[in-house]
Image (tube, rainbow, N blue to C red):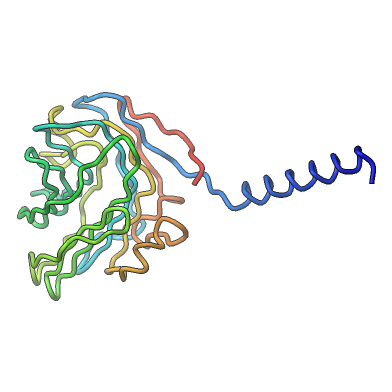
Length: 224
C-alpha cells in the first residue's frame, strides 16, 4: 500500500469519527447574564399550566458570585406571592421556597464550572431534596399537602417582588444558566442522572420552550 493510500484511509477515518461526534451532539440555548442589574431577566413560556403536586426541576448553572450574596436561581410567582423559588442564600445555603415558606440545605457551592443542579419535591410525602452533579442531598420534609398554584410566571435571573417587577439588583443572577427542564412528577435517582443526556421536561422542555429576553441577557448556542 502506497503512502497516498495510507493518508487517504487515515483522513477518511478521522472524518467519519468527526461526523459521528457532531451527529451525537446537540445545540441548545444558554443564557448569559454578564453583570448585576435590576432590569435583566428572562421570562419562560410554560408548556402547560403550572399546577403541581410534585415536581423535578433541573438546570446547568455557573457563576462566580461569592460571599454574602443572595442569588435567585429560579422564580415562579403568582399574582399574590412567590409560589416556587430556588435560592442561594446569604450564608451560602441553598433553599426551596414553596407557597412563601422555605427549607434550607447545606450543599456544595456553585462555581465558574457548570454545575448540574436538580430539585425534587412531592406533596404527598413532603419529601424535598437537591441533586448536585448527580449526587443527592439528604431528604427533608416540607409543605406536605400543598399544591403549587397555576396562573403564575416563571422568571430566570431576577426575583419578582411584584407579579413581574420589583427586582433587586443585589439578588440578581450573574453567570450562565442553561438546560432548564421541569417535570410535574418526581424523577427517580437514575432518571435524574439521565436528564442531562436525553430526558426532557414535560412542563418546561428547554429544547422547545419560548424565551422572552430582557435587558442585557445574551443568548448563545452551545453544543452538548
